[in-house]
Length: 182
Image 1 (cartoon, rainbow, N blue to C red):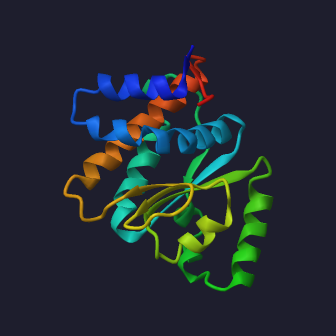
Image 2: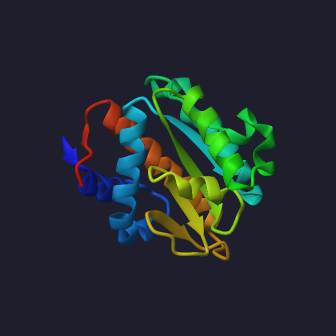
């Protein structure tokens, strides 16, 4: 069983596409992915939220995370906007608190937010309130997040590569091939 940092580096280097950019970011990546994968394995639900330009990516995650060809347990990943279409109307602190109460009732095993998008989007209010959120933030350095640039011409490719790495980490952890200790 390999440790997460070494396993991540080996997985990046085995990838045939141009994934070497991730090597230098693996130290930022490892604690974030460890938290998200650990929470998933513990039975928490992942609620995916994206800003509008990344909605395609949220759908991609949802369509691929529970692919039956992976021969692993089905996992609780949902698009939050699909479960609660009025999400974009929640702005006040009181509305956020009521919404979080509903989420606590709906997901008694717990949940975490997986947000992908710009740091100034209204959905970040909800994402930042939860210390366990899995944040992929564009154009701004935010504590406990993975930062990307929206001006990067390879952004979509990088998102797909990061998803593939996350998904591989999840599988390796579920099958006991990976020690999540960093």
